[in-house]
Structures are given as structure tokens and as C-alpha cells.
Amino acid sequence: MKVLKLLIGTIIIGLTLTYCDKETDNSSTVCDKSVIVDEDQYNNEPNDQLTIISAELDNDCLKINFASSGCSGSSWEVKLIDSGVILYSDPPQRNLRLSLKNQELCDAYIGKEITFDIGDLRINRDKVLLNLTNSGDQILYEY
Image (cartoon, rainbow, N blue to C red; front, side, top):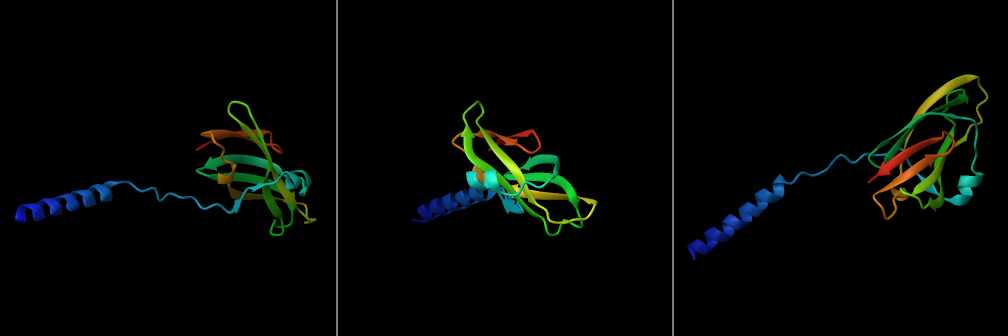
């Protein structure tokens, strides 16, 4: 009986130590906003003048640095909108655009950085090419 208890205790301790050794990925990135997948919004949302300076991926977040004229940029309404259409190539492609509604009438040139959760753009492949139409950039999103 003592041998059985010792054996069970050893197994439990071994499993516990094995479980604790597993690395956990706590590097989840929190994005400012989420991408919108909607053909109507892609075609009809505001398209005020902006310049995309850079766009890069950080896990499932697409970080976009952009600039436009204005006073402070505090009233800007910014959205990342996907057309809802998947272009079947290798790799598949999606078209996105950065929508800006800017009613500020100042002459200052304001730069901003914003991140978008693009997890909803995943398809049944391990990657998709994102075409950021108002910059001409293509970004390979691998997941």
C-alpha cells in the first residue's frame, strides 16, 4: 500500500513539474482599435487627405504612423476598413484603407500613431497579403 501511495505521489509531482515548465505566451498586444470588414464602409467612409508614413505588424496589431493637416488631431475620426473581398492569389490578398474624417481647419501638420487589431482578417491559410490602398504599401500578415 505504501508503494502505491509513493508511486501515485511521484506521478502527481512529476506531472505538476512538467506542467509548470511549459512556457506561456503572455505577450498579447493590446491594439487601440479593431479593423472594420465592410464593403459599404470601405467605399463610402470619409477619405480626407492623409499621408501614411509607415505601417508595420506587431503580432495581430497593425501599427500605422500617419499625418494630416489640422489643429491638434484630437477630433479626427480614424478607421481601418477592409473591403470584405479576398483576392485569391498566392498568397491571398485583402484591400484595406485608412479612413480619416478631418474637420480641423488649421495649417499645422500633425502626426499620429494608431494600432488596429487585424485578427479578423485571417483566412484559412497561414498568411495573407494586406494592400493598404491609400499608401500603396503591401504588408505580409503571417499567423
